[in-house]
Length: 300
Image 1 (cartoon, helix red, strand yellow):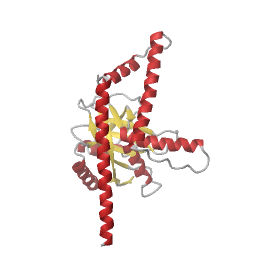
Image 2: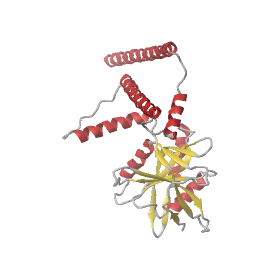
Image 3: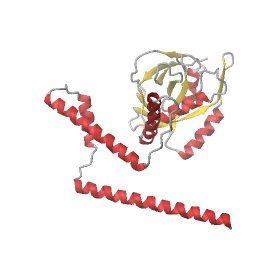
Image 4: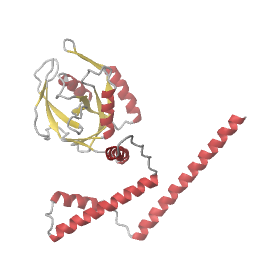
């Protein structure tokens, strides 16, 4: 039977095309939901497939979706993975999101890699060929107070004739939300902070409207600009030592801003706002007409 060799080394880049892994919070929450819904509470591991996209140069991997896979494991008989279930789910997902391809697999673990890690890695390496498959390890216990997520790439040792043995090497892993994920996470964070400040039952916070979210984003942007301006001023006056990484980040952010004068920006913004209001007005009229039509049908 294949064996896994895991070295507790710092996160380093490997010789393969993937050296950094970025995962979506939705994928992590799906993995935790899979763990909570496991058929037997005594089962330590759940595993599944990871879908996502690779950067054009192939050096950064973005994980966006996770697919749970049923399995059974016995020390005597080994691992029995429901391959048909996985391929059915993957084919259905490809019809909806053809850009999301198989990039690896995940497993929940509180004490390192599972004993059958090399067997699963060998299967997904074949399925994701010619690109390597990464492994994402998620600790559902949250004993340290934070979610422990680790990513591994592998190097085949080829010490077994039946299946390849693998050396698991850690790679940098970050949880990066998009704009839609960030809005949901902000609401969850607000409820958590409210629960810590107030005793007793926590009231559910209302979901903000689009205008309220836009106002909140603008206020946050203004606060960020004030902090950046203060930092630049302190660097110029010598109060704060200059940081090359921070300076490059500020330069990249400024370079993304289009060069528009005030009048052109106001015209474009007002035009977009009018279009948005018109679409909202038409949607409200359509909704009202559908409600009237539904009521008339019930009367007839």
